[in-house]
Amino acid sequence: MDRLSEMEAFATVVDQGGFTDAARKLGISKSAVSKHVSSLETRLGARLLNRTTRRVSPTEIGLAYYDRARRVLNDAGEADALVTAMQSAPSGVLRISVASDFGSQHLSPILGEFLHEYPDITVNMVLDNRYAELISEGFDLAVRIGDLEDSSLRARKLAETEKRMIAAPSYLDEYGRPARIEDLNEHKLLHYSNQASGGVWRVTSPTGEKRQVRSAGWLTVNDGQSLLNAAVNGLGIAYLPAFLYGPDMRAGNLVPAIENLPAETQGIYAVYPPGRYTQPKVRAFIDFLVERFRDREADSW
Image (cartoon, rainbow, N blue to C red):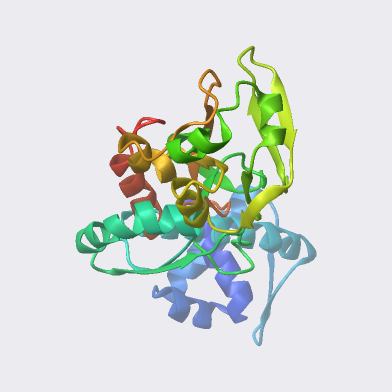
């Protein structure tokens, strides 16, 4: 006989307190349940149940076996449910956390295509310039840029973006172009207030050395688009990713602030809570983003 069937029959007898109710629960005959349990006891060489005319109860060995058997049966049920879930059509509410600038510039324009492709999914996207706690706040996934701070989350890389110090030609005409990192101390800097590093810029010198720039910002704001607007209007030097400054750089509204300074590269990731399997709606959205950003170069946003 099938070992799992024997185990299930025995565990159901214990759960239901007798063979009759166990047979009704399993949808098989009482004699079939009895055969499964007898076969199990014979194979194990131990009596698992005390049988009287009034009741059935597990022996000491049977009780110990029941605890392990129930875990095995629960795991088997989860395995079956996993296969069913992974093959089912993506559906349900998908809650996404993403930074305001990236979300409005690069996710909002493509959500319509995703929703048409998966009509049974409803998207709830929260644009916020902070790192949301995915599990406690009920998010299915987040899109994050740069170093990943929470190693307990699962992550998939979507693309890369460059990060440069940029300024408007009008600003450089008025205040001069800095030739070295040290020259930034004499310039008006535009800071992003939500960075954990505060008013410190970590940049790479032409020789590859990591340097820190500490200077009070002339303007500090918690929104990347606002910093971009300030830089375009000649208010100072900003340190921003290419997914924000790309169009203005190509239009000539912005130029690199220090010409020979290498660009930093940042990863763009989809992160989601750990678990035994990925929900179909989450997997579908991540696959969609990977495909949409597949050919995007770090400097071509």
